[in-house]
Length: 220
Image (cartoon, rainbow, N blue to C red; front, side, top):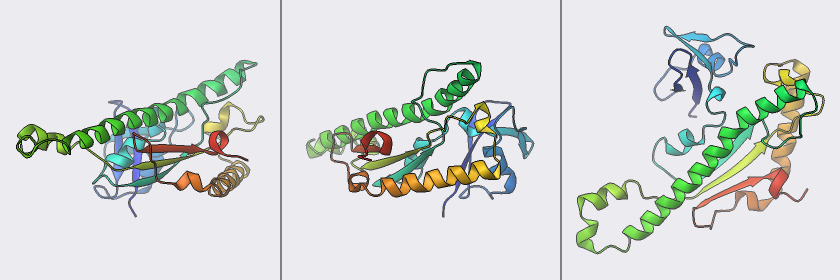
C-alpha cells in the first residue's frame, strides 16, 4: 500500500510530501503531518522542522491524481472541516468558524481547479483524435498528447459536520471520547453514502469528474 504524508516546512513555507516510494516513513513523519500550531510544536526531520500540511492544503487531491500514470480513479476525500456553517454569535464561534473556512477552502478550490484541468485535458484528447496523421506526428502534438487525458474521476466527499457543543479547540482536542465520536460519525457517513449507487457510478459529464456529498446529493 502506498502512503503519502503531507507537511509544511516551517522555515521555507513549502508543502512537502513524504512518500513511502521515496522515503522510509518513520513516526516523526506521521507526527509532523498532525502538528497543528500553536497546539503542537513543529517536528524535526533531518534538520528541518515541519507543521501539519493542512496549513496549506487539508485534502491534497492533486497529489493523489497526478502521481504515477493517470488512471480511472475513485477517491474518498475525508474532511474534518465543513465549508458550510452558521453565522457566529460570539467570539468563540468566530474563532471556530474561521478555522472551518480556513481548513475547508482549499478542498473546494482544489476540486474546482481539478475539474477545470480535466475538462481541458478531455477536450484536448478529443481534438488530437481529429488531427490528420502529419500534424499528429508533429513535435507539438506529441507534447500535447502527454497532457491529454480521457480518464474519469469519481470523488466521494465524507465531511464531518461539527456538533454544536464542539468549540474552537476541535483542531487539537484528541480525547478518547472525541476520537470515538469522530470514528462513529465517519463510519455511519460511509455506510449511508454507500447506500447510494450513484456515488460510485462512472462520470459521464464533459469534464469526466463527478462529486458526491451525502449532505448535498443524498436522499437521507
